[in-house]
Image 1: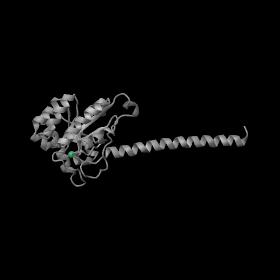
Image 2 (image 1 turned 90 degrees about the vertical axis):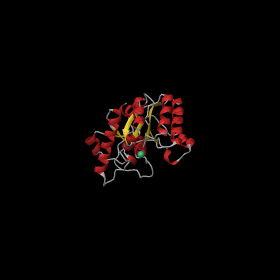
Image 3 (image 1 turned 180 degrees about the horizontal axis):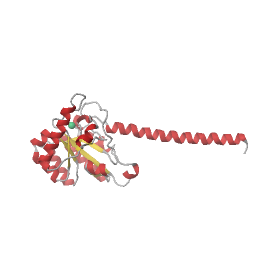
Image 4 (image 1 turned 60 degrees about the vertical axis):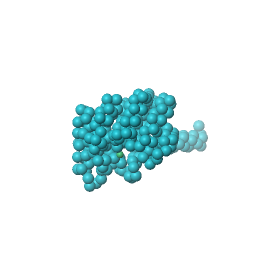
Length: 249
Ligand code: NI
């Protein structure tokens, strides 16, 4: 082959290789941007914090095997809405995860016991729903411990899962307190809308295998939306599991 022809071939190969590398790079950065946005969603009106944990589990190959997703409910239990939600979940045979505050566990122990009896996972959401800041590390740690104690008092079991309010977390607590932080990948912002249809469509249009949906069992619209989300996504072949099952899978 002549030198010119050989060089031409090398240029084509180079271009192909560069194109492939570019494609791989784009795919990777798209994914990492998504993950960051997904994991540091905002809860309430707080800004997304740094330093949380990545909760999206599973390599793509693993995600092919099932279509599991997890519904999570923060801030409860609520004497009326949590009970309504539990009724609806029981009818549908669905397990979810409740991140409860210690104060509410002490107010409504019978609802927490019912959560446990009906196969739901119970996690920690601090005692007074406080946000971890640079200044309140010790108080935050005490709130985690007192909430763990409140949960154990009622259920007889320790929980290893915490959803830190507003997603603010410091990794040092993972080893120190043996707690695993669970953030979320889909935030329907149910707290800022009482429009059930809007909450439902916000969620079902974005859902993917392995997603963790953040909701609050504090509003009638959230409960109604959650049950409709279950009905719609079950029809699409999704299976609702606790975050433990999702993360251990
Ligand atoms: Ni909360």
